[in-house]
Length: 335
Image (tube, rainbow, N blue to C red; front, top):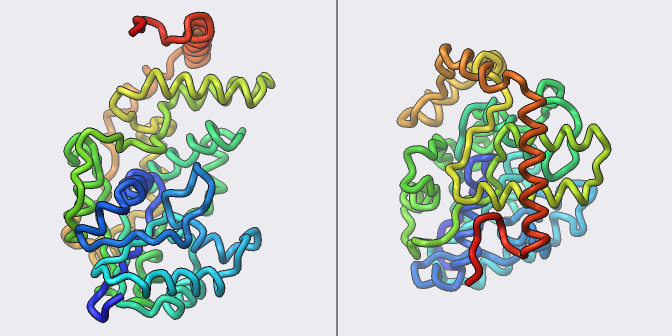
């Protein structure tokens, strides 16, 4: 690592395209060297489900960690110091959960010229997205309201930015609004590269939707299946069928809160959002409420809720049977 090199730490947030960004850097590690960018191996888990992000770095501070931060960070520093690339990138949404004391330990262990970047979005959208993931993949059984009431994740953007700025300095913080509808093809990667001043492989033709929140009816279907004691193995099979059915569709909004419920949830963050925008994101779009007239549409969508979910489940069951009988999805033709 040269004296002019710079470390970029991408800290999330959850449900803001972090997995897509991590997959890009992971897939193109060798090619990115030609653009002066190094994506370290140390700190990335060995699990195929998480090997693309540096999750082991923040996880090392948890009681369940396989390796303590002192040794992991020493290995990471040694790896970084071997490269001559001018840009080094670490990425994990789990960085956003670190405490001020842990951030200080990180900075002392990696004493490089550093900048911190994160994307933010409406707090209610983060919670709904994480809830859907936890229901579909982790076994969550509570309804969205109970889940939201107990949620402990990083939702105060001002506090998050202030904690990192206290260690790295305010000028080191870059906060970006997450607005997928404004990204070409809803792909966040070019936006991230441009914002960071990076160049790299275009990624044209590649998948860039990872860990996408499932539609509300999928989440409610899984809750319904779990409530009637369907096995988790069968639920996983049904979820995979949903993923196949939806893979070519535009990623939906979470849609588990009504607009009024989302606005009520977000209202508690209004003052802190305004202060955050002024201090750390003056040129970024503000976090604004949903249109008030969306409530009637939401209620209309949910009319006859359980019959609609049951119909969805019957459709998926037929889909699974077709795959089992023919080895192909419905409508597919042999090649």
